[in-house]
Length: 607
Ligand code: F6R
Image (tube, rainbow, N blue to C red):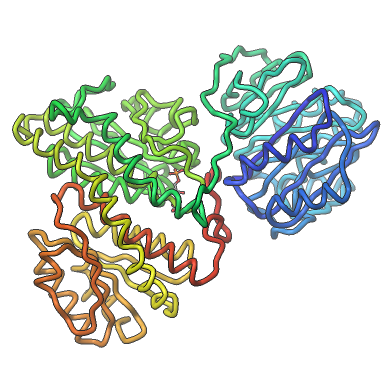
C-alpha cells in the first residue's frame, strides 16, 4: 500500500507534503518521510510510526526547498523502522515507492556485485541505486529514470527526485494509482486525488505503464517505450475538506453512527420509495439474459458479496459465483457465456480486486463496480459504476461501506428479479418498502449501545471467540469475527452454524464465548439446536436475535441482544450494526488503536 506525494512548487513544500500525507495515512502508518532539494543538496526527515512523529521531527529540524517528495508506509519489505522509511537515497537520487518490486532480489544482487551498499531492507532502495548508477554512467536524470523503469517488475507507483535539480520529478505507475495535479506554476503527484485536493482539482490519472516528467510549468507523459501519450485532464470531485470525528471518540464510532443516513442515501439511489419500484439502471448487460453472475472482492467487501449471492439466487434465481479476489485472479475460471461480473470495493484500489476485474475485461465480460470512491481505478476501469454513497470511510475497519455495499446488492437483486420475472410488481413494492425501513431499524439498534458496551467489557477478557450463523447470517458471522479480530486482536472465527459439529465444537468450553446471529426465521430452530450444543458443553452464548427469537430461545448461560422484529431482507444490513458495535467497544476496552489497528491499511494496493 503506502501513499506517495510529490510537489514541484513555488514555496516551501515540506509542510504541504505533510498535509497531503495526512490524507493518505489510511494507506499505511508504519513510518513516514519527506525529502526536498535544499540548495544543491537533498534533505530528508523520516520517522517510525505515524505521521505525527514526522511532524514533530520536522518541527525540531525543518526542511527547506520548493520541490519535494513524501511517503507514508505500509511495510512490505523490511521492518517498520526509520532506516526502512522512505524516501530512499542513492548518491543524489531520492525515491518514494508504493507497491512491490518483484525482481528486487535479483537487482539487489546485481547492484551489490557492482559495489552498491544497501542501507535498508526495502525493495525500493534498488530503484534509487539503479537510477544513480545510470547517472554515474553518463545518463541525464530523465533517461536514467526511464532505463530503470524498464528493468522493474512488479507493482509500483514511484516518484524520483534529483540532487541539484529543483524543477524535475519523474513519476511512474505500474499497478498502484498515481494522479498528476495541475497547478498554476506548480505541479503535483499523489496516490489519489484526495491527497491533492487542497492544491488543485485538475488531475490526470496515469495509466499502467505510464511515466511522467513533471516540471513546474509542464508535464509530459510517456509509455514504457518512451513514446509520448495523451491522458485526459479532468476535474476531480475530491474536496480539501478533512473529515473529522465530530463528537465521537473514533472515526469508527462516527461511521457506525452514520449508517442510518448513508444506507438511506444509497438505497434511494437505486430504489424509488414513493413508487415502490427499483430504478432502471443503464447496465452493460441485461439481467434477464444472464446465465451467471460473478462477484469478486476482498475482506469485508467479499463478505458483502457472499450475502449478495444469497439475494441474487433467492430473489432473481440468478446463479452467482462469489470469489475472494486473490483466489479468483489465479484460478483460471472458465468464463460462462452470458455472464456479467461485479467487483465490490470501498477504496476501488484493491490490487487483487483490480486484477480480477482485468481478467474479466480481457475475457469480454461486462463489468459493474460497486465502489465507494468513484474516481478510483476500479471505478474507472468498469463498464458501469454502481456507487455506494457511504461518504469517506476513514476508520480502517469497514463499517458503513459494508452496509452500503449490502444496500446496493439488495437493490440490484430486486432489480434483477424484476427483470427476470421472478419478482412480481406487487412483490417488488413490498421489497422496496421493506428495504426502505432499514435506516429506521438501524437507528433503533444504535440505541442498544449501553447494553452492547457492557457485553463488550466481558468479551474483552476472552482470548478466542466463535461466531455462528446460518443463511445470510453465516457471512455476517464471518464479518463479526473479522471485525473483532482486526481491531481488538482477539482471535475470532465465523462459522456456518451447521458446521459446528464437523470440527469447531471441539473448541467449546467455558473459555470460548459463542456469538450466535439468529433472527427468528425459517431456520431459527436449527440454530437454537446448535446453541444448545454449545451450552451443553459449558460455552457461553451471546445471542443476537429479535423479539420473537428471544422469546423462543432461553438458555441459562445466555446473554441476548434483542433487535426489533424486521423483514428478512434487511436483517443482514441491520444485524451488521450490533456486531460492529460489539467489536468496537471490545477494542476500546482492550485499549487498541481502533481507527488504525496494527499491521493494517485502508487501501490494499499490493497482492
Ligand atoms: C475489514 C476491511 C477489509 C476491506 C478489504 C477490501 O474491515 O475493511 O477487509 O474490506 O481490504 O478493501 P476494499 O473494499 O477497499 O476493496
